[in-house]
Length: 353
Image 1: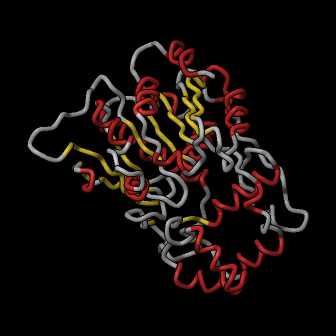
Image 2: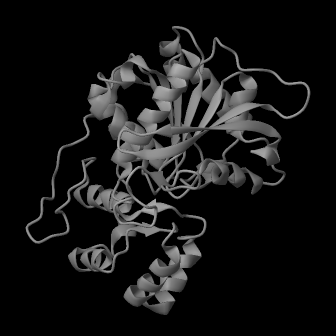
Image 3: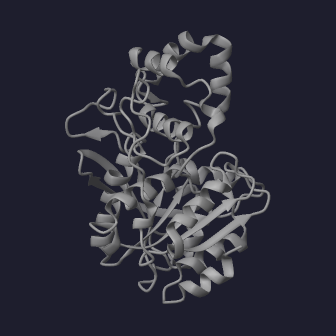
């Protein structure tokens, strides 16, 4: 954050299943003159994508030339109090009350637990610290965590604590071709060899095990994509959860027996209709996204009905380029959606395609 000249303060929070996480609060723009957050605007909790920490997401904004102040910090400049969640398994969030970070038990989680645990803890902390309802902003797997957790715990927890939710590159079901190599034999081999995370504390031994499975050339291609370097700190269980959903074409809960003979293939669906319009959602995505295809964003929108009050596809963007998309129009779309007051219907009319 310092490279963008913002100061921050870390806080430790503990999840309901024993993980200690770091929550990073952006306190101000560096220098003697700075503007504090506007108390009439909702604080924002940011949920990063798979294989990324908040600082890695912010570094992505260095790639366009010339680099520009990240969209996330533009929300802070506009007056939103900004908080970044370091999810379990990422840098700064490698503590558990019972398990070491290089243990199988530590990594026994999917994105559902990251939602009902990490997201919930972050929302609870910021809501208490600010005495305000919290806005959420997720990207990719961050949106999956939000969808899952809020469908399971909307009435019991999120309804009274969350103001609005901006979903960037929203993901429920991911594109199936990336899971072609996933079958009963390969998945059980991965489990037998003790591979339970990618790019985390055991990566130095995990990469050797992967080479034994896919060979040297296969490993070369695997690493070239960025697994273990750019894409890191990933639970295998989270990846398998996406694979199960993709193969079944259902946004459903994890099946422990999916990859076993006669294993359970269909589990309970995440019921997005349980998330009500008291907490408006906005979807912001690229029209060329083939990782989390537009048809699934449309399906989620249909299921959620008038809860989705902003819906905007940006021409020419895919899933990856959405991460550093930063035009004035886009930033204003986000700010307009997050704007306080009872004008959500007008916002929907403006953004719906």
